[in-house]
Image (cartoon, rainbow, N blue to C red; front, side):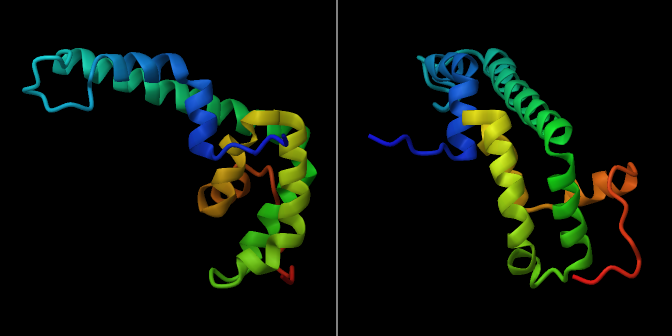
Length: 142
């Protein structure tokens, strides 16, 4: 049976199963007044631990892709930066494909942590341009 690629939520659930299971075991999704629910403070701490795990994995995935797929990442960022908000998805598909392929090769089953963020690339574009990691030529055509 062929393995199906995880969604970004599935990748997070797999990578952060320990903190998620602790959160669920404490019945933190139950109403605060529920007798089988852990304290509000403990549930808050467990929720933070899930968030920290997810953020750690997102940052780690991004750093690995940035290190190993820099040219593909820059091509995607340049394309999005010079495309209009209404057509960047279509215009940038030819450069997004190689970036996703590189991310899958580098990250394996953690790739969805990175790939999921490509659907809303404004933060990525802003980061890469403001840090000087991707230069956008003023006369570039989309």
